[in-house]
Figure 1 (tube, rainbow, N blue to C red):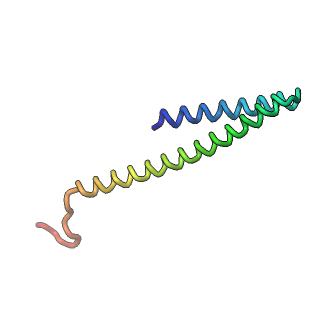
Figure 2 (cartoon, rainbow, N blue to C red):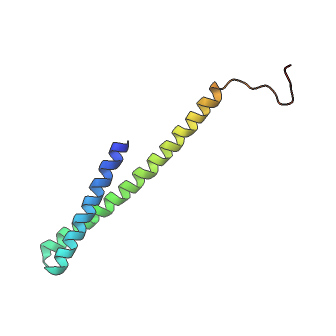
Figure 3 (cartoon, helix red, strand yellow):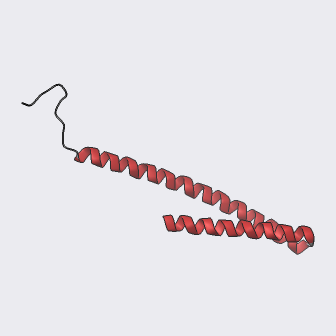
Length: 89
């Protein structure tokens, strides 16, 4: 999952970078095509940000679940301890 997270982060960053670059270009040289491309890239960037946010939250829940399962397994595999106050001498 780390590889997928990295790929999504890189794609999100590049889409946001290109959206900002086209926004700057459109401010300097206004044209209908520039406004259209800027709008399209801003919508795409917003969609990628929402997707990346959800992906990260889902993975954090999976990590929490894995940690809980690991602790339950270790607790089940642990040898039973002697009751407190009992001295086996």
